Image (cartoon, rainbow, N blue to C red; front, side, top):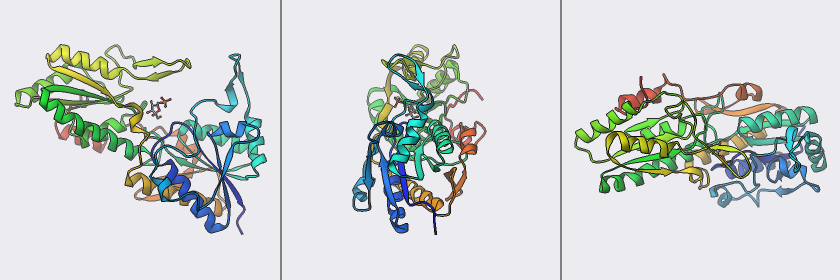
Length: 361
Ligand code: F6P
């Protein structure tokens, strides 16, 4: 007989497409074992509230329509580390015991946490202190979590960025312009690289590879010399300026977030080549859309596997995708391994093989 009887599930960190598909799959699999699932609202925020904010989930509630929806029906947060919680007076407080108390109030002994590396590190500490069985499911459009080949949300984000290039190309050709597309990805250039290849970019700039104005301008001039009147440039948000700085903007909450490198590069291209240049910053459009079929399949496989792991009595494991199958690995190993773009890997070679400028070799 298995140990888990009532499972808590939460989404944590930035949202992405496919989160609802994970929740749906976990609820279906839990029903197979006769277990209850409670959805915790707004990540750990729901566990800090009294009464705890949660919703009972059953198979009638989690239908196929929900799987098609972007976002997360549970809500999420990418703020408020419970071990150093920002208080109204500006101080930081350890509120981890309140979260653990919240889990006890819910009567759950197992937790499925859907998140990226930051969330996994926090949930792991909480689960350890609270004696809760934790299974992690990787999600992030950045696809930067170690070991898993794919995290939920990445494929859809790439599809959105590719579609953006598909839409920019005709208008670029109509006006004989260079179009710069700034995409998300934090410190990893996976979205830029995949979308740039799929969307027929001429230049792809990644945080992992040094670039130069001369290199970019040379590529654009060669495109022009070949008789094509437009060019497409994809820039990952954490690409460094010529001064070696990552472009950031300070928000009203005092936090800095990446943004602005697209405009910076657009100006440089216009200056260096004389080409009329326009810049599009894709932003959160990459996160808030219905998941594509790959993310629906991945999310479904991950949700089922997470519950199966609990049924096997396992804990502190992260579900991962490797070689076309689901595997599970210690959460610790996954968060210790940052998955940046492999600059000697297949996709960088492919881009160069296609004549795309991806930085100075
Ligand atoms: O980590 C996901 C991500 O979308 C990054 O690609 C991006 O830099 C960041 O989150 C944006 O965060 P926020 O939702 O706080 O604006």
